[in-house]
Length: 162
Image (tube, rainbow, N blue to C red; front, top):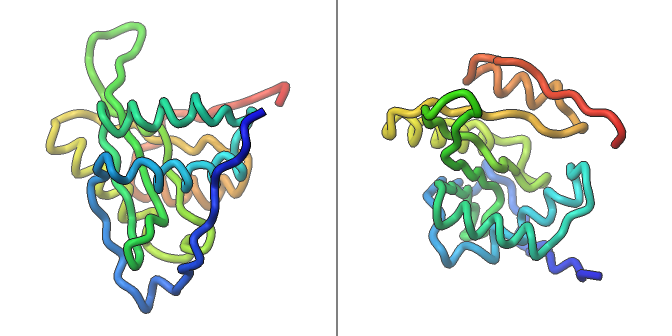
C-alpha cells in the first residue's frame, strides 16, 4: 500500500491581497505539482489513485507537454497540464488537458480563468485546437459555466458503475 505523501503548506492567504503569478512550470516544480494533484486525486478521482503511476504521468506531461502553474507567495495553488493528442480517425494533432486543478482555498478567485486563458494562448501559438473538459462528479455546473465562457461545447461525458 502506498502512503499518501501530500502535506498542505501552511501559507494560506487571500489572493486579493497577494499577487497571483501564472507561469510555465519547470522540472523543479515536479514535487509541488505532485502534492497539489494528490489533493485533486483525493477530491475528484473516480478510481483509486496509484501514486507511482500518477507521478510518472505528471513527469511525462511536464517533460513532453505544457504545464502552467499559478503561484501565490511562491506556493503553487493551481495547475493545468496539456498534451498533444490525435483521434482514431485522423492524423491531425490537437492539445487536450490532462488535469486542471485549483487548491480549494483559492477557488473564489480568477486563477482557473487565468490558467485556462494561458492554455488557450499556448494552443494559439502552436496553431492547434485545445480540448478541455470537466471530468468530475462534484460542482460540475459551476465548472461547466466557466468552460462555456471560453470554449465551444462539443458534447458531454457519462459514467456508470462507479
